[in-house]
Amino acid sequence: MNVVEKVNFILRTLNTLFPNPMVPLKHSDSFTLLISVILSAQCTDVMVNRVTKDLFKLASIPEAFADMKFDELAKIIRPCGLVNHKTNAILKTAQILVSKFDGRVPETFEELEMLPGVGHKTASVVMAQAFNKPAFPVDTHIARLSVRWGLSTSKNVRKIEENLKQLFPQSTWHDTHIQMIEYGRKYCPARNHDTNKCIICAKLSNK
Image (cartoon, rainbow, N blue to C red):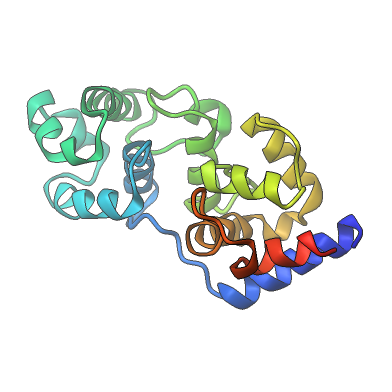
């Protein structure tokens, strides 16, 4: 199986298993998505969605977050972990959005990555899922699958992202990155990985 055949097989399999991939973090706009992604660092999407269900009832726009007290926000988001870091990042980000961007989330990587708590992966998620801009966010699931599937030999997420962008058509990036996350969770976990039950790994190991 050459590289083109491998990529086509992976895309066909992912599209069959997850034909309508949904953004895992529940949100109503680019700002609530940004907050959710910040909260998702070292935390499950399930927990983030549980926390934001109540959080966004209290505040859902930058102006409301900018006026929140540290202890008030920290109490709500504590279940997501890294509470001090995330509370500071969210409050400062909201304040910057209000003061410098008229309460709007910027639509460029450069401006997004200037915000506290927003790295390249977070910016990529917002660009892809909120603004439908070309981006291929790489999380731990995607990094693991990329190496297992022979799509990259690097441990550096930026290099993995570069490899994936070269291999997959740009038109597939949005759905494929969500599909790979879902596939990794269901069929190709970090622990207790059974190659025989992992459709893609089983095929590629017998190429």
